[in-house]
Amino acid sequence: MMNFDLSDDHRLLEESVREWGAREVAPRIRELDRQHRFDPAILAQMADLGLLGASIPAEYGGSGTDYIGLGLASEELEYVDTSLRVILSVHVGLNSLTVLSWGTEDQKRRYLVPQAEGRKIATFGLTEPAAGSDARGIQTVAVKKGDRYLLTGEKMWISLADVADHFLVIAWSDLEKKKRRDPSGMSAFLVERAFEGFSSGTLKEKWGILAGNTGFFKMEEVEVPEENLLGRPGEGFKIAMFALDQGRYTVAAGATGLIRACRDAAATYARERTTFGVEIGQHQLVKELIAQMESDYQAARLLWLRAGWLKNVGRRSTRETGLAKWFATVASERAASDAVQVHGANGYSDEYPVGRFYRNSKGAVIYEGTREIHKLMQADYVLGYREDRPTRCVLPPFAGERASAR
Ligand code: CAA
Image (cartoon, rainbow, N blue to C red):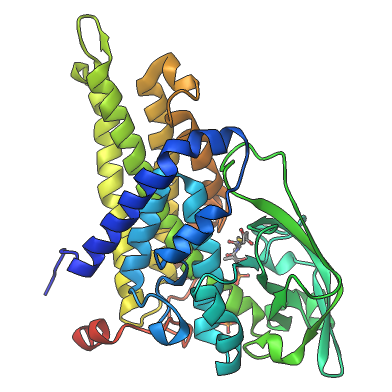
């Protein structure tokens, strides 16, 4: 039976994140953004709310909320500012859920538990200076030496690069396969900032998500013990794609929150501002922009909810997650541009939040699969060039949901 109601737990989560964001972050986000300042105190508060352990089972220190809860939290965080949602995307989406699904019990104890409890911060390293969309084009290598791997390479455009303690790193471990670009030559590693030969830095030239930390990290023969190999040798590419299924999910839900923020800001302004003797909301061309935001918001929300439901019941959602991410991010860019338009000249100043929304919206049209990569993937599913088959690459399902779906 179809049921579009949120549970009481979902509502409570949604309200608590909304209330926290409005109270603690919204009043000072403009200043943080102006100063290009990432505030680490926000991490501690997110940990107190249980957000850093969202969708991680209680036995590993998490809050135990399901994947819909993770989406709701993403939506509410990005309603305030994209930088908040990015924390969830890399820490929970790309890293912790991947360790939960692919890690050994020992790895979960050593890495997942402190991450879920918010004592350690985690991120993900796939992208490099010369390889973004072309994930097979990475150059980082992992050379086996006895019971260790020596990792050498540079990762770029990494959210929380200068903040995180733990890094999930994708590297070539088979150099022959690297020459042939055969992705079964890649492996995934759990790397700590404290490992010798590791260094990181912050990118200063960004023009969006300015209250977030984005940077690079370098590894010069970083010794990684064999027990920090995630999955089996050769599973790195799959693990990266699996991680992106979860990261993209939080991006989709987050961009949905950004559309809502644009809609609300535009509607508020449209009731305040008058031209030609009436509130500008009375003009049909303004109504058109607001109506588009509403339709995009509702559609984006349904798309991520469907992907979240598939995750809850233990089914692969690569296709649905990609569609939700593509649709929501493109729509959020349009909503932000139109929200600026509704504000007229005032929208072109940072006295109003819509300029920040506009700058922030562009990032997600590029990261975690560009608009173009997602278009290609969706077309390939329809054309039958890309197989939409279930694999073992699914998240651990939530028991109650699974029972009702099968
Ligand atoms: N889950 C599990 N396995 C998967 C998978 C998934 N979601 N997607 C693919 N695989 C498996 C496939 O089944 C296949 O395995 P088999 O050969 O056993 O069937 C294998 O992986 C290869 O898959 P593909 O053939 O799909 O690989 P491809 O080369 O065609 O992929 C691509 C092309 C889709 C464009 C891919 O390269 C891609 O998604 N590129 C975009 C990368 C991206 O989003 N990068 C952003 C990183 S975010 C970051 O690093 C920044 C930060 O802030 C942390």
